[in-house]
Image 1: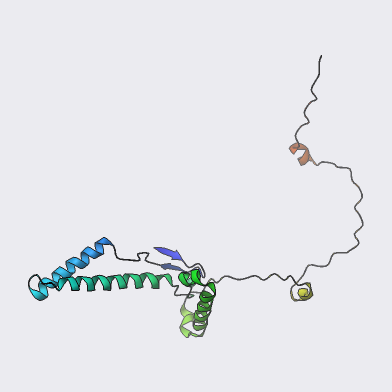
Image 2: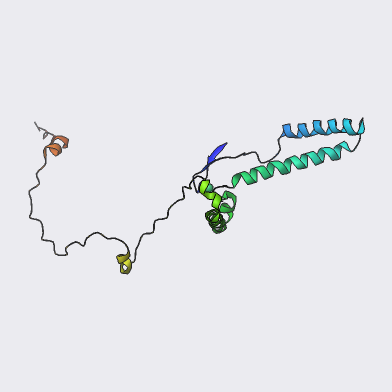
Length: 169
Ligand SMILES: [Zn+2]
């Protein structure tokens, strides 16, 4: 399955299978029986040990593949660590990006699409640091009163006044 890294946006393929399925257990059993026939030339009780060994190795492989597949190779973002502690995930990403910056091979890697954090300046004393719009004059003469005149578009959009109901007694 192809996914996008939530941090840098790079595409990668992950395997979402976390554990062995029934088919894998059957394959391990068949493999253990085959090895038993090859090595012991008949039924031997050690086939159960062999079966458990094969299942354990397969389980370890599948879990490692799943766990390492979650880690982004481009930016080092780990969603599992981010779920537990976003600060730790941020430290790991920072370390990874630092190593990547110092690695000369990184010049041949595709550029990262890293998110940009925009900081709003709320402190008016530091307004000089950011370009600000020209100041507005404080004494604005009041606008002369105008009679409400609707433009041609407003006339077309305005609903026609309902006729007054006639009262005939
Ligand atoms: Zn990433």
